[in-house]
Image (cartoon, rainbow, N blue to C red; front, side, top):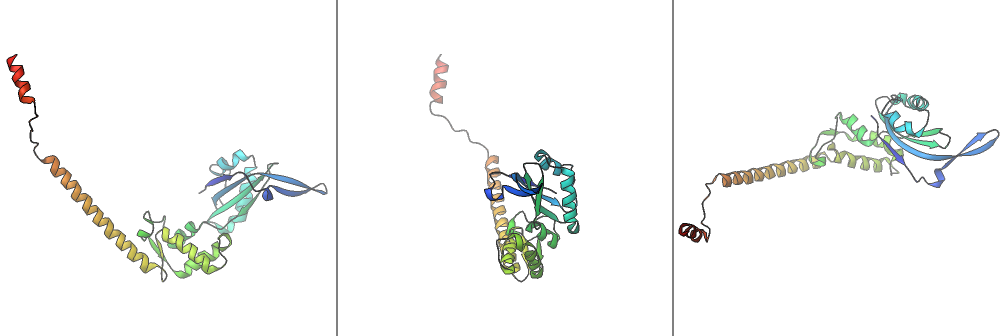
Length: 223
C-alpha cells in the first residue's frame, strides 16, 4: 500500500542541510519533499514506490533498504514517510506514526469504515484500545496530552462508524437507529411516489377535442 504527494515552495528554514566535506561544512539545498505511505519492511524499487521516487533521481535501492531496515519491527503496519531530496540527489527521510484510520481498522478488525459515517456502526473498540492508539499517535497530533489525543482519535473513529465502549457507543447506537428509521421512511415515500407514477401511466388517455379541428374538417370537405 502506498500513496504519495510532492510538496513545493518549501520554507526557507528547511531548504538546506550542512554536510561536512573535506573539513568544511557545505550546504545542500532541498529541492523536493515527497510524502509516502508504505507498508513497513516491504518497500521495493518496483511500482508503486519506483513510480513516485524514480523521477526524483535518487538511488531507489538505497532508499528501500534504509526504509525496510528502519521499519522491520513494524511489519504489518503502514508507515508514513517524509523524504527530503537534495540538489545532489541524496536524501533523508523521517518516519511518522501509522495513520489513525489504519490503526482503528486494525484494532477493530474491519477492512474498511462505514460508508455512512456515524450513521452506521461497523465495529466497537474499548476505551483501553482507544488510549493505546492515542498514545501511539500523540507525537504527530496537535495535542499535548493523551486525553486530548483520545478525543481526536475518537472523532476519527466516529466518522468511520467505529464506536468506543463506555464513551459514545450508546449515543452512536441511537444515532444509527434514527438514521435507519429515516432511511426506511424515505424508501417508503419513494415507493409510494413510484406507485403513483406507474398508476398515472396505466390510466387510459382521454381524447380531448382541439378547438378549430371541426372547422378544419369542414373546410376540407367543402373543397
